[in-house]
Amino acid sequence: MLSYRHAFHAGNHADVLKHFVLVQLLRYFNQKDKPYWVVDTHAGGGLYALQSEHAAKNAEYETGISRLWDRTDLPPALADYVELVRELNGKSSTPKFYPGSPWLALRLMRDTDRLRLFELHSTEVQNLANTMDRRFPDQNKRYAIAQFDGFNELKSVLPPPPRRGLVLMDPSYEDKRDYLRTLMTLKEGLSRFPTGTYAIWVPHIKRGDARQLPEKLSKLPMKSWLHVGLTVNQPAEDGFGMNGSSMFIANPPWTLEATLKECMPVLTAALAEDDTANFTLEYHEKPAR
Image 1: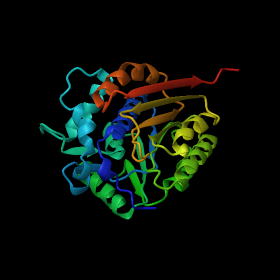
Image 2: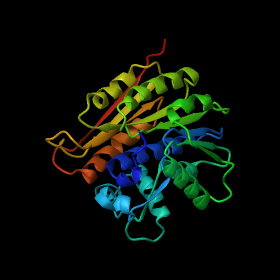
Image 3: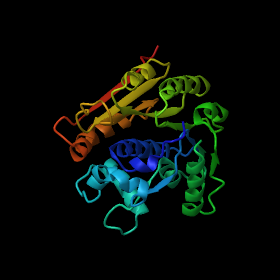
Image 4: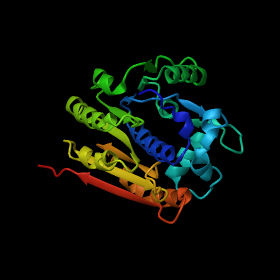
């Protein structure tokens, strides 16, 4: 199914959570001199114009990144993420562009690190190529773009040569098979590269598959895992729509839990759409034998 276009949702509450966590993961990876790879299985278009026809239709960014735009009281880690988005927008007083995960990754990665991007949608992959070429001229040796199904192709780049790596999986889940494919792809990824860090985005919707996926992921063999969820409003009575999302991280940095404990109350209050807004945070480490 190739009808999904992320531009409709760019900069919304789910993007804020996903990319805030991604920035923290990349900052952690940068603390060590050893190079690493980032693999994005569903890369999207790379960057989104918020005044475009797609993004402006529902203007979801207005209840997402816009609510953080002028805040001067954010915790340092959350302010760091917002500043990266502001950097992309230059001196604009309001957000006009929102970065996808490929832009954020290449912006933060070092010269020795490598980025591998998979995107199946023909229009999106062309947008991605144009974005990366325009925004990061002369940097094409640092990244590679392939028009393939990231679920299928992840195994082709694992384990990465430096044996350090971060995998981001954020399918649209428009196809209900994506829930099982996400689970099986992580399972295979851990078997090929058990020390890698895997970040998986999960929507908060009525489907049982969505509610059950984090628990199923947590049962896979890994050293540790973290699951952070953000709910911004009460589910719609008709069951449609997304009222939050979560990030499941396999083998997370040891610093991430403390960062989220500090930032999630602030982020929840900022993005709340009614008084049912809340966050959840779980961390589990496998006991040493």
